[in-house]
Length: 190
Image 1: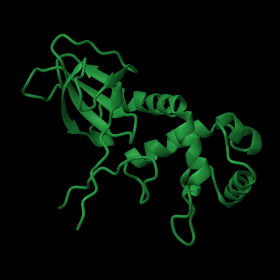
Image 2: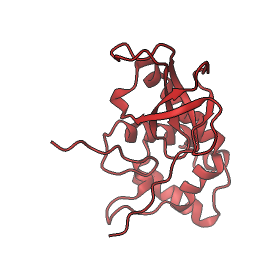
Image 3: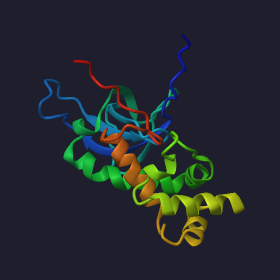
Image 4: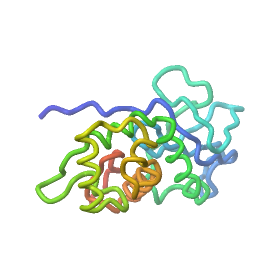
């Protein structure tokens, strides 16, 4: 059996910075919670000594020389985030989607059926059979160019980026069977 190499995050957005670490931790080391830009992976990272981070700041977390991050400590699930990070997550995800508009518009142009009864676009909040039919018809006539184009051609879809952000939150919460925007968090075996 061939293992596909997992795509690693290159950049992330700071959700919370704890200069003295977590309250329940035995070590008093600074930590930060970050959401990756590629697959919205939730990570706990250790900043380099003296590094200060601001919530909403974009930081390099890739393999190369990092300017602010010393170590990626662990992957987190949504429940392990601090309240501050949970509150900031929706804004961070929305901003990531807006900054990478072309990548996410392409999803509206390419997503297909999941199975015989369900289409991947129906996983977006508010997209039912009627909206799905409108989207498929519009993209067949001409591919979508940007979020404004989607909103213009599908009037009931005012903010496609917001729909995508809501879907990311659902997937990160683990309340779904299908993952189209994130990497599922591995479930612990009992």
